[in-house]
Length: 111
Length: 114
Image (cartoon, rainbow over the protein chains, first blue to last red):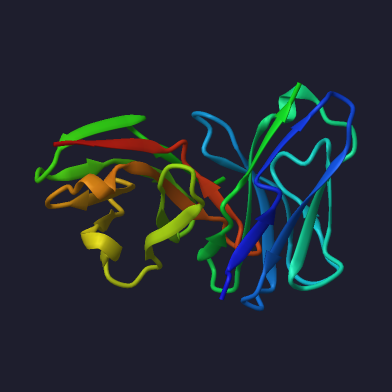
């Protein structure tokens, strides 16, 4: 059981470039989430999904898009990266309320 | 609105001494509260959870937390710190009716010295 995996682990982008972060889970969870973690701010929810084909905005959705075409995958896209999007991004999945399983994170730097 | 406040951004203890990480919550409803731990360069892991059963909750690695409604607190404790406990700890509240959405505190970084 791999749990929750994220690809890539590290990425450096120039301002204006685009990229997609991939999250995959093998636990058959309905709920999946994308967070960003910045120093002193805990984790903030970007977007989430309550099932295949559904997505919804979280606390800080601007500048990001998501898709959940398959139950096991949740993609996070940055169409035009900005330095303010430099952060560590975590994907999580869950089935039981409050219990979320996190991936190892993607460290993104936008220059 | 629901929220959590972690009262200390950094806590430093000696190995073998007790650990206390403080968390206050705000909620109009009976809250579901959690503590998550993040070791360096890792994802977060669930440590323990309170969901309106027993007010003293035991978690993994010897940690426990007590829900005190009168004080709106959910402090995390451990009787004796181990070097491997050095990590960042997050107090978390589940948004009621919110599709399992969580709100995280800012985190407390625990340092353990020999």
